[in-house]
Image 1: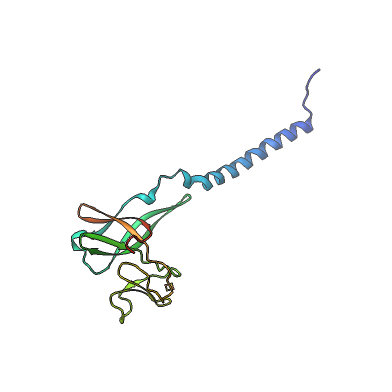
Image 2: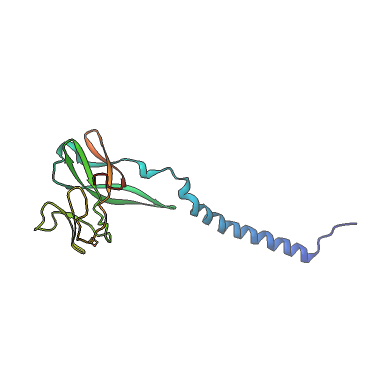
Length: 166
Ligand code: FES
């Protein structure tokens, strides 16, 4: 008994084949896009070189800029960020400028009446030099702290984490 393919069956197979191919060309890139960050090596753990000389850091918090490549799926962009950096004895401290209340940027000595504190102008948040939030002001936790290092006499900045000073 011969298995002849009818014109209707041939058309169905052809349409299913073309449809499957078109669906695959749309779905596979989307799936790859969705899981791509899982295959990236942990760039967060890298230390980023800054242009600040460790020997020139003092006891007063100074704004130190740094740049890094941020990857979001397939899109990558260069991000400029900064930290408030100072020395306490031989130790280098780098604090995040992001207020822990609602994310505004804090400045050192931003409030003239409190020249030895970090100040957030959005809701008058205040922090001590070590990043500890001052009771009675809106922030409810200390400023985050960056990992720091030194390479060739220059400051390097690493991952941001919880404040280890308070
Ligand atoms: S965002 Fe800083 S005090 Fe509100």
